[in-house]
Length: 297
Image (cartoon, rainbow, N blue to C red; front, side, top):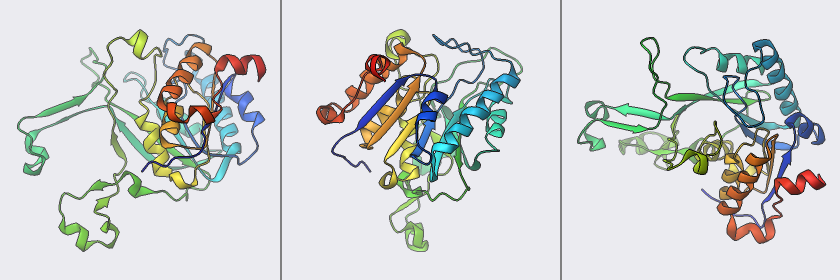
């Protein structure tokens, strides 16, 4: 479900997220959807992704603590974290760093690529052959499997934040379930915690995806819908990158977005992407570029 608003106010800060968090009032953000650096040696423009493990986790604890301060009592932090096969503890270490500040309410598995055998899908699927869909980075190893998924940790203050589970509902394959279960009156069931969201196919990485680690905008779209669009006024992404969360907000008509990044190139690209996503609304949106904020904010 998409709802429109009279204006979408998007603010992008060329700044460290800790400085931006410090400027925000406590309990002033409804939802945070973000994907911080994984400390796996990814080649960012302005950030060295190779901190000593202890320093990285200390920094993680600091920014999650700052995020928890600004999150509303019934707010949600959706934290996307990946790992590499030779260092699988990374994602778990990151979510452990959140324990002093927030409760882990749900674990969502973002599936980027999947193979489905025709026999396993059943006759109702109508497959004529085995199906393999999505994109992944092949691993040349006799020890590790190709890594086809990442985590999205759903963190909240008390672990009891209500969700709009059927906003992501999927139709029942067996229509008799609709009559059997009162909760199935709309003909859909909860999607569950496995989300297949492939990357969009691109022609040139330097032009179409000029960032080494970004998620498709459909991922934050689903996070925002799950939280419940009717009660979202302000969304934040403290590691804005190319603005996938901002694009999701523009598409969904969410009133206000705040993004932060230390790389001006990424922020300028994010601004352009949001403008493209919300051209009909931009006359009233008050969207400011990263350069403007650098000079005036």
